[in-house]
Length: 234
Length: 240
Image (cartoon, rainbow over all chains, first blue to last red; front, side):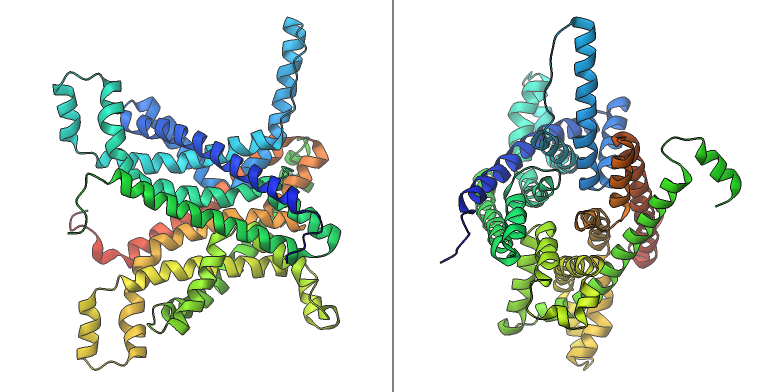
């Protein structure tokens, strides 16, 4: 049997941290993606420009660099903010900007940009007649979005969301570099202490494989659900 | 460097000639690492992709497994396994391999090559499998052998179809190479981390390096756009 030298429980805990981090980042990414896609399609020059700058910037910078910037820079910003609040309002307010927050912010921001592209394509795939029909029924903009656009675009967006999620899951490994004790970091420390890299990294790699395999099945199931109203095959 | 640039740089606190040279060395390492991994990765991926489409499961199966494993796990873990793992192989420290793999550059290169080759194999496989059936039939009708068919008909058109996805892989590799700094390689990110810790100036150090990566990325995007224009000229709209 696999002997993890007593690191088993902390590896398990690390795996949970990884999953938590991935899910929270996904949430942020979906929100940012919807915002980005709607700004790009809004026709408002300012919003379109802003969203375009956002997606272009993200595509040019490595995820690790952004993570380091957010982690080290975030602490500086928090320190400045807490100083300011202390001097101006005499409130002693401080919080440690930890790797988890930096990780969620960075990964959410990066994949928000990719999601914007996915959602933009999906929104454009919704038949414009549907939106007109909504207008004809006197739906408000929000109502049209919520009742007509969102359910129909989901079918087109889901494969893209699935791909992004698979990449996002693997990107969470980077957060171990800025010191989050996820399973990669536990494995790294354990393998240094025990001089047995294969023994700790290979199980972690298998956990990642299992997570991707499970999400693949889940996305397939979800895809079948949202495509229920669409004829299959030819 | 010319004197006036040195003088100008020396009036800055952080971006002095020394730090700029440090960034430059990092840039050279990053470009070397990425270029070599992409080149070797491509050379490995082309035969793998061709064999991956062969019907015999004993040939395509192992290649599928390889791409599945390397695409399904984070590159960071692959890097750790290779970087820490190689030193653990019994007796390697007595062979000439040790003089190579003692440097962190080569384990990192190996990890990157294996990773990019897996992705490139799948990209090429998709392009090969999308070859129009009529083209293959025509080649067969001309009496071309399998090897000649692959070389003359399948690969040239597959290369065109794969170009766009491959340019994404190249960008991905530039960004992924940042993790080389984790195994003590002083690439661009490594240089930025050095400069950050020397001056405790996160914004200056990392925003500067982000701009450099951006310049690198968009140069590559631009080159690929030129290449696409050339290779996909026949698909251009008539009056476009």
